[in-house]
Image 1 (tube, rainbow, N blue to C red):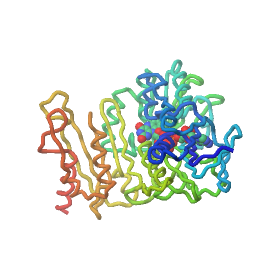
Image 2: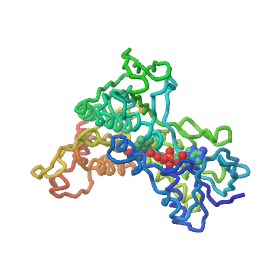
Image 3: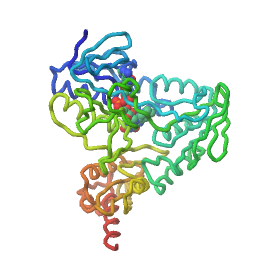
Image 4: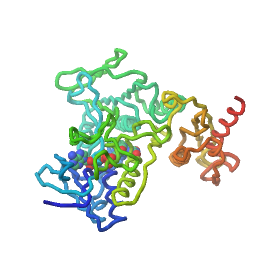
Length: 448
Ligand SMILES: Cc1cc2nc3c(=O)[nH]c(=O)nc-3n(C[C@H](O)[C@H](O)[C@H](O)COP(=O)(O)OP(=O)(O)OC[C@H]3O[C@@H](n4cnc5c(N)ncnc54)[C@H](O)[C@@H]3O)c2cc1C
């Protein structure tokens, strides 16, 4: 029987990162990775491959990322796990005995249990075959209906519009990218989507799909029916992800609604079994309550923590902040921590502030507006959220706010941010939009 020190089930960002961390810090530890698909995937770039910006080959990662650090890659699916004997069985019947097991099986697109959701012509997107199927369909399709206006849904809707399809974007929330921005900043995204001719339906839920073999109508909660040319047009479900935990059901592994339950060392309830990335359920760094965080930028740091603890270097994962960014038309959008809307739903009494500058000195070519919104918990004065909309350097600003949230900074502390200034890259030294938003809040607090 094959034996390995660490067996990793899954070859996504968490699988790759944990492999590399173990092999870098402990080259003598043997690592075996099980990954069924031909290639690991750069998921974030899929919408742009669909748009035709580059070929599908460009979203395939090289196996070198795993094999180049001395790990063994086995292109197989795990089909059985026995935590008592520490043996994992692959599809071909090979048995692998591990000392420590990393579960990094990720998540798959959620298909809502509504009538007609199994009809042909309804797609989800995650894998290379999913991407290739959609690209093939685009040769004939005249219409695309995208359900879900999160970042992935929005990026796809724009790809279909760019390809010349009549495109609908539907979300039950009252705005696009609802987990990232509040309605006030969402309005800028609406403006950008409308400019691209995308037909928007917000604040309305998907009710059902009608059709016989193929989907023929998308029916919304307000009674509207969108006709679909059966077998030609496409409907895309982009309404969230579900952890890939089927293999571990009824094994004694502690699994909750959003995935495998782990502690801050990424340990599960079973000895020598760890989990990280999209397959896990974890909590927010802000209030320590469970929150969804299925992002590659969460999977990677979780995987580092998991790998270190497994080889005896103690480390802790503090929780999700969920900083994320996207592009809608000409503008870039970002959000981190809680939106004002979400913070209120979580029971916070919040105060918000705004800052606005240009992205370069105003007289410089290409200077464009940048707006920042900061959300603060009134009681503790801690920064718990931030949003940025602009035309450049949005991700960098989001990361600054994320760092403040992660470190439980108060609005006063963030208002003291020491920043840089230069005509091509920032506004005048006199003002920084993040600091301005914090000062706005401090002024409001003073008047209370
Ligand atoms: C279209 C799209 C765009 C995205 N854009 C962004 C973005 O811009 N920014 C961002 O941060 N995140 C983005 N994400 C999310 C990000 O891709 C995920 O959070 C990330 O891939 C999670 O990594 P993971 O390693 O936990 O899981 P995954 O990447 O899902 O990897 C899971 C791995 O486990 C394997 N596996 C599953 N079951 C088994 C089994 N039984 N045996 C063996 N192997 C198994 C899978 O085949 C896969 O290799 C995007 C996702 C999609 C789909």
